[in-house]
Image (cartoon, rainbow, N blue to C red; front, side, top):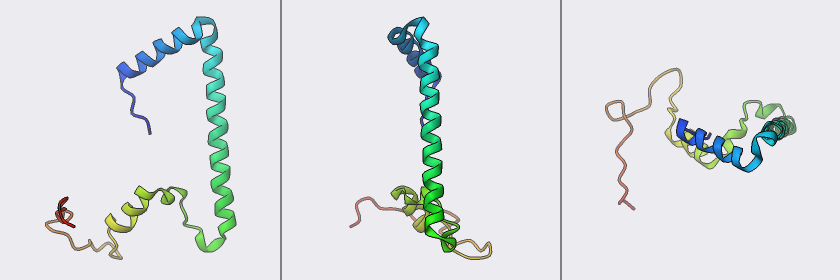
Length: 102
């Protein structure tokens, strides 16, 4: 997700105003919104097609799990103990990580 602050938003708005002009800016914004809506619809339909194609045994499948960062986070950093038992941790925190270790 994009994290755009107030100053960045104002700068983007001024840049868009300079590029498109005051008459064309509403039309450009409308076209951009339409394209983003179509892209979102296409992405949702593609993920639904993947879920339907995988069958009922993968009903809990989440497309976001295909992201390598999410995969590592899910399989290595989430608690794996069943029934609410916390995983073994050091003082309730993750074990220390050494960048220089091989």
